Image (tube, rainbow, N blue to C red; front, side, top):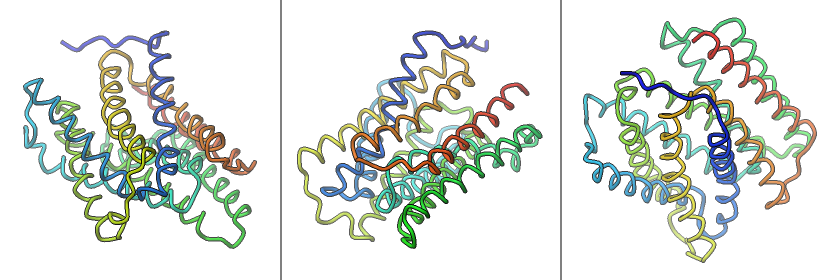
Length: 302
């Protein structure tokens, strides 16, 4: 029997407000601890801690840990894309503002829609969705223009912004792999374990090769950042998200998740004194509007 999902209510609104706040500040948390622990080392360590917690949770629940139902190959591919996403996030935060990363990372739904259009015939984009895609990419261009005017000939910020867009593309590709493979029928915890374990291995190698695994200073700020990222963000918040997906309509959750970039931009301005130039804010608004058009059109089709 297919479980009936409930529409949005006060409980969901409160839970999503908390989750979006947590997700929105993660870029800020990484930047705050960056002087003590390089960003790439941070995301590697947090992935390892979260993977351990998820593995223990699956074991307690009596669920298999790997290779279940032909999920190994797509699981490893999804894990590699997940690692690429956070590689781009970590490297991007070394060059651009956390507020910029928050917006560009959440272009993922647009890339997901494009990927599903190419991969699954049932997910072809409608004319309205193509308009949303165009609107989002117009917003990206406008936000880039704001970074260019602010940075002048300084290419560093533009590089960080580009890495943010690539992170969104990698996140979208991860979703496409999950939707188009056996992972779509696998337990959510198993899919999450594939992603976290792969990220830990690949990002740890990346940190070693780039030299970011050396020279770490485990100050109280560093410990607090890693524990917050590993326990609260990558473990508790993801499990809470999956629990909400089992109870509420996914489309309603998706709409409420649009609050995340707003929290990210606000946190960057509040805690890191990041300047929010008008062109970037206008571009961010267009990006979010385009995502809203893409997802609302998909909801209407279903």
